[in-house]
Image (cartoon, rainbow, N blue to C red):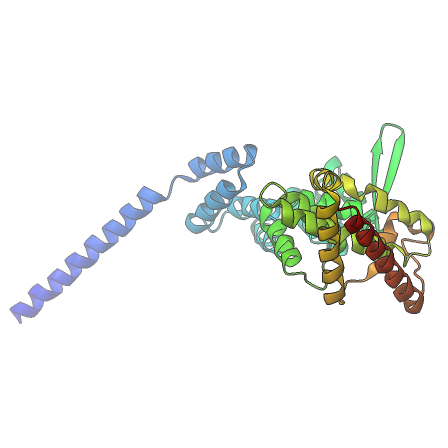
Length: 333
């Protein structure tokens, strides 16, 4: 009996010590909420999104009933390109602070980035009900409404610029501004020659890879541009063809590198493109390049294309012309 009492006493002592160290561990690793808020704000101001994500996680872990952690976790996820996770965290922040306009405004922005324009507009509406003088929410709401219609509208002084959200150069700019994690997804898709990846991304990715692998960059650029030339033939609106001449601006280093190749090097590169094009017959919808034309602004955001029979004929003709050019280059060796 005495032995059992001693053992019980030891167990109680062990539990007391365990509780003490658990409490001590919390005190060592869990800062005061005010301290965390300072760390979070410093990470936010310095645009250190990884640090912001880390400190927001700490706030959520130790102060789970505070909307603050979820709000800034949402910002970190949005900036890192994880838009759906941003939406989840903003939604959690709204649960704790349903009358804070910026919770809805920021979730609206995450919806916008995720191309869910209906929910974006709905959140901006709520934000403006809570804070009618929120100018940024008003501007972002207009962006979302225009994007739903298929356009991005920007103003510079007295000049108003319109651009389709499907315009190849809008897509290239969007890619350029993506977080690296999102860029990596496109880079991997391009390297694997995924059937659904648009040629504009071949060109944009080429420029990203140029400093580390000039040969791969040159091939991707040439493949993307050849497919773009073929795809432009599908557009009934011939003004879309001007996109072909602007593509070098998406990848200036890579295009200059190719321009300085010898005839022999260029012939080898273009022959590889022809071989690749023949092998990879599956391709995304070719009308992507048509959105650079004028028709999209006069036809309610829609573009028209020629028949598949005519398009296949024009694709074959483009191959024929490029092959003739390769043979001419080879004769110059």
